[in-house]
Image (tube, rainbow, N blue to C red):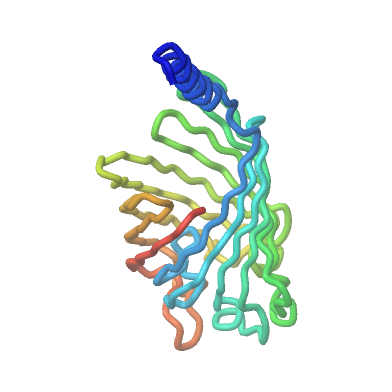
Amino acid sequence: MNLKTKSILVLATALVGTSAAFAQAAAPAPESTLSFNVGVVSDYRFRSVAQTSFKPALQGGVDFAHTSGVYVGAWASNVSWIKDYVGATDGSTEIDLYGGYKGEIAKDLTFDIGFIAYQYPGNTADKVLVNANTTEVYGALTYGIVTAKYSQSTGNFIANPNSSGAAYLELAAAFDLGNGFSLTPHVGRQTIPNQAGNAGDYTDFSLTLGKDFGGGLTGSLAAYSTDAKDAFYKVGTFDNLGKSGVAVGIKYAF
C-alpha cells in the first residue's frame, strides 16, 4: 500500500467515524417512553395512613409517557386494611390505573391534570360498608421545587358510605441535597364528607429522605404523622392507621 492510498483510507475512516458520531448526536429524542418499576417498603402509607397494617408491601408499576404531555400508567401493591379494618373477607390487592396530561404554563411553572382509579379486585367491602374501589380526579401546579395538588373523589371514597366528593389538598417541596440525596417535606389535608362528627377528616405530615444510587436504583427513608382520630381510624385490636411511624423503601426502575 502506497502512502497516498494509506492517507485516503485514514481520511475515509475518520469521515465515517465523524459521520456516525454526528448521526448519533443528531438523532431525535423518542416521542414516547415506556418504563417499569418494582420495589418494597416496610410500611405502605397512603396520605400517611397505613395500608398494610404497618407491615411490608411489595409494589410494582408501568408507565407510558408521550412528548405531547400525555401519560398513562398502572401500579400495584398488597394491602390489608380492607380485611383488618373494614372486616371484609376479601380484598388484599390494590391496583391503580391512571392517566393525565402535563404541560408548561410559563418558565418554571407547570401543570398536571388527570384521574386515578384505585381498584381492589374482588374486595367484599360492600358486604360490610360499600365497595372499596375509588376514582379521583386531580390537578396540580408546580413552581420551581414546590407542588400544590388537589384531588377529589367522583364517588364513594375507599369504602366510606355517602362519601362522594372526598377531597385531599397537599403541598410538597423537593430539595436536591447533592450526591444523589433529596429531601421532600409534605403536608396534606383529607376531608371525607357525611361522616359523623367529621371523624374521617385529618391533617398529615411527612418528611422523606431519598437517595439515587444510580442505574435505576433508589432508596427512601420517610417519617409520617397525622392527627387521625381513633374513633375512625382504629378498630378492635389494630392500632390507629394514622399513628406516627417511619418506613424504609427501595425501588428499581428500568
